[in-house]
Image (cartoon, rainbow, N blue to C red):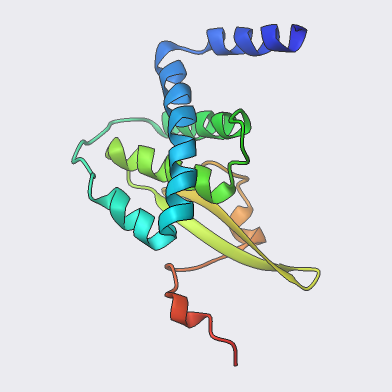
Length: 153
């Protein structure tokens, strides 16, 4: 029960805009997970682009990083596994809706003979929802590759 009080105290310590951002992220995460499963990444991204407002936001880099932190917190508290791709795609979309230019990055690396993939978001070339050296740990694609690029020899 003490754990619940600690979480509630942390939530109450947030400002109203931060609470709203956290709750919005928690509400959207299941829909993003479902959308990725049903449509796949490229079609889901195309669908998200149809509803792109032209709002210019004057948020500081610290405020943008705070949004990323809140999305990460939301991803840890939903009752299903929110992948790096799901949370990064949601963050990228949330920033775009506020008129903030960000980049969704997807990278790969070899790890003990297995191919690992990872997704993160960058703002002004800096990872905002992951470690600062994530681009060194995973080799990012310049752009998403078409499905035909993955043919075996």
